[in-house]
Length: 176
Image (tube, rainbow, N blue to C red; front, side, top):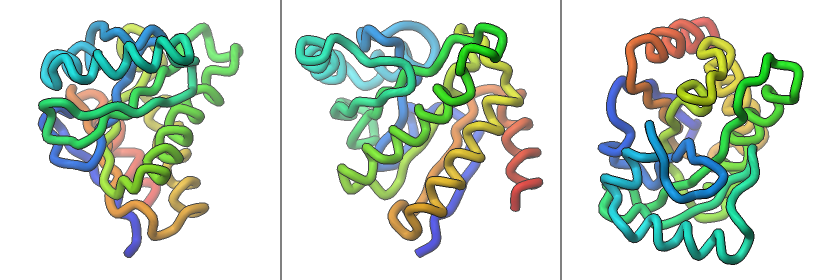
């Protein structure tokens, strides 16, 4: 089974996959954008587990990932990862963003997840340049797949807006 990469234009909270990824903030207490939508749609069970994680480890560091229930979402799990805030590109942002994808996929393997959907991490209020963020996401995911062949069936990139969808479509077509 070769891992399939999929590109979806839509709402990540409607994805029927084992896990969706939340572009969370370090507090894990919900916020705006994707984070807020996931918490609103998934219900209080997600926040309850996030609070338990906070009580144990004090939140989630940039580039790291934690897992909770999917609550009322179609996905069984939510993997929360904290992307970097863009500070001009010379503060390790690329490595931190790459870590988000790598650590999320590692956590997915540890939990037997075979279908997963990613949003556009850090491209909203964290202002990471969208074209570069797409390149980092695709490159990191492809390297992970090469290092862990046949472990994950489908990895979807879910773009809520047309701009990100177009950037991913262009970069994925170049990468095939």
